[in-house]
Length: 414
Image (cartoon, rainbow, N blue to C red):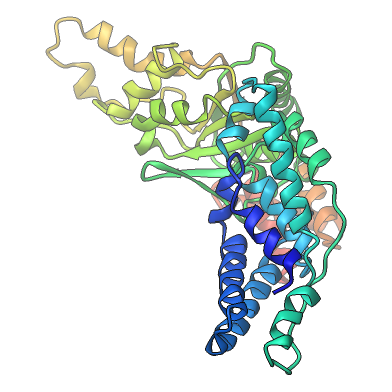
């Protein structure tokens, strides 16, 4: 084995601050390959087949790595290692996100480890292949590319940009789901944009401005988007989250039956440098629902309040979020009025309530015309409007959702 290659491997094992990188598949396969090479170098001729297989496993991992832009798969070892460095969560990275300071000694140690990664990134396929050829392997082998990248300077810039880029999965994705006690990324979110939407500009701008104030560090409000079905409440939240992701905004959807987990979610997000909207879609409760009490406590600013990096945005078709019956109103409780006030008070706990009403005829047809242009539907305007009105009557009323369904059907020729 080439002495230089052996030294790269030995130095890699000395990582401490960046040690979690060694658990990633790319560097695990590198270590396996190097161990096979060392066995081969000790004169174990039977290890040649294992070394070749390990070499190909490592090359395969390089091919699987995304390049710097997270979209192109390049077959470049330097780019794969570069992306790995920026995606991997370390205690150092998390502490920096919380604005913790490190001693000059530890900062120097990080510089040394970044130099190790930088030197490793320049390892060529030809250097490794030479050891296999010297051991008698004569068949052609796959190779990888390398590039000169500034790991040290770029990683320092990455630390400064944490409030906007985040780390770990929060740097890779911008939309998340909370399920069964854990946060998962949404790899293929609905990429609705503000430019795609028409109508409700005043309502949408209220939500947008509140969110911008939140990102700027100002005093922003939790938001309840209330109104008729199909008026674009959920779409508004998703479109705003998409448009502001590069400013450090992330969207986390929590189902209403898991709201009792909110304190744990807030603890998880409290030290994150990014800003989060916890999104609750179609919010309503039955009486005696534990999730009602959990959300009410958070909105009231209890012990587990939202903190400075989390807001709650909820949508609902109900103005009063707790379902109640006439029997409950006429119950035998002594202080019935207190109970009724409590069930009606949750909506008031949101600092900002925005109403999305069903559009009138003119607004509905304006949305239809906008969507027709957007989808490239060519039809006489009078005919378009007549058909759109007829479709709305069949589909239980006018709404942006109805308009979209109508235009999609016209686009499909149905």
